[in-house]
Image (cartoon, rainbow, N blue to C red; front, side):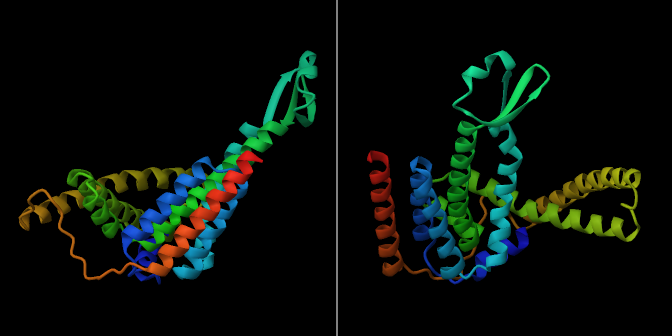
Length: 265
């Protein structure tokens, strides 16, 4: 999936659009989503999905798979938000909050209406925020993003560390995939005990091979006269789109107006 995301970032329809324009647009919507009410957050998620799927040409199936990831994490944390419990002699304190429940020993477990409301607020904010992040991930190559951050004053040391981390994510994934395929071909996961043994071997080999890859990268950098700063060549000439800029500004103003009406009505 990470390799596919990187490929889409280099081949999407908004590839030649200036990274600064896309980044400012995503940051503006991210800021709005952090203080907006759920209806506005839902509109932000839908709008960013339109930009990502229709304007950038990202396949809908891939985008929905990415959206499924934060929803899965939200579902795992939902019981902690929704399910509450009190002692049976304190039932009068939760009459307005309990939707339904049952006795469990000397306690009463119930589904909290406040917890449900809080869970839905977290979901809408998470989806709105992650849609802005996915727009940046799927339309701006990582090297272009780092170059943009350098131009706005981010220290070179931080951008170089981010570039190395990004590089070793792919090294880690490729190494893990090769080891897992080799173990699968030898029926290494046939039983539970074999699975645990194979998994421990995979983790050990993964650590060892990652260190070896790091040593090879260090030697290759030294042999090429690395002077402490990565230089990335860019062959693309970007352009600023007045149409997209006007559409983004107008959309943000409409969202702010809707938020103002919801907040003060």
